[in-house]
View (spheres, rainbow, N blue to C red):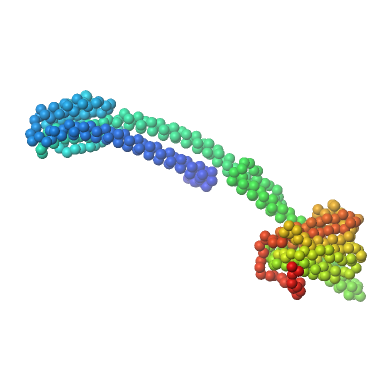
Length: 493
């Protein structure tokens, strides 16, 4: 019972089932092909025999036409007819002509075969025939086809003409050849089955590796990858799975890094709030200052949480509400809003792109204002902060330029990462380090990017580059309203 259970369990294996179906298909195809070949071969033998026998019977009928019209015929006339027919007969290998006169054997084209001499019943049947007869004699050692034609004069059969062809040797030769083909095919199929078993094992090896790799991947170790070899479909699936694992590991590492960063960012305000609340009982006269400090810390935490939620929503398909906007008026509005932040900077509007663009007005404005606030944070009173827009090669370019401290080359490669802050002269600028991450997320949501050009002491230029017609598909139902729709001037164009 245990062996039967193990045998049944083996068919759950893909390799075994695949080879079993392959073997069944191959054996069935080979068997059917050999059987059909044998039938075609035998039918051709019988067809050839029938054609030859019919020709001999037709020759006999033409010779017997004069006698058939006579009202009276003698036995000597019938014998003379058969002698004439046999005299004109051209002997063929394994073919005989046998004649009967008045129910008795008369003569044959050449000596009768042994099997016919030993079968007097068949000879008697032929001698007494009154109607034409065609039949096959088949057994394990004999394959004969005969055609018997009686000679009818008036209403009486005065003789019988029998022609027969023995295909036993040809049949046995063909059957032997087919048996040999069957044996060779069986041996070849057996060899191919062994080769197919080995090949299937190699082809299915990536699937086993996938299974092993999937079992080894845990929350703490996602570094396992499936080895790839070749260029077939399974290799393509393996490469796709490895790419998926890379993305999952990147997302997992990003999540771990995000949790580490957010816990670090929240630890400081929570510690400050907790310390202030603990000391408030001992210094009640400091209550107004303490409440103001705690409120400020809570506002910073609230802003941090909102920024993080925004970055999370940036990956959703309904993050943007795309509409056609006039770039020139939008540039002017953003410039007017930016210069209202602080009047002690040298604000400039350098250019306005005179072309409509499809974008999310509120998200785009948020990205620009983040760049403006970043410029204000890194400049001093009197420094230049310039805004401008232009259209080149079906892309809009919106830049924010300042003449502030600039960004160190070492910081430029990471400045758009979450919680990244530029460090100049060993001084870290204030802020949670999410503003430029939000700018980059909004630009990418528009199928665009952010370019940075900066040198220490010479300021920085951030440029938003986005297509005029993004290919992204976003929601058409607004989830937020633009703060700038109150002023809808006609386009400059």
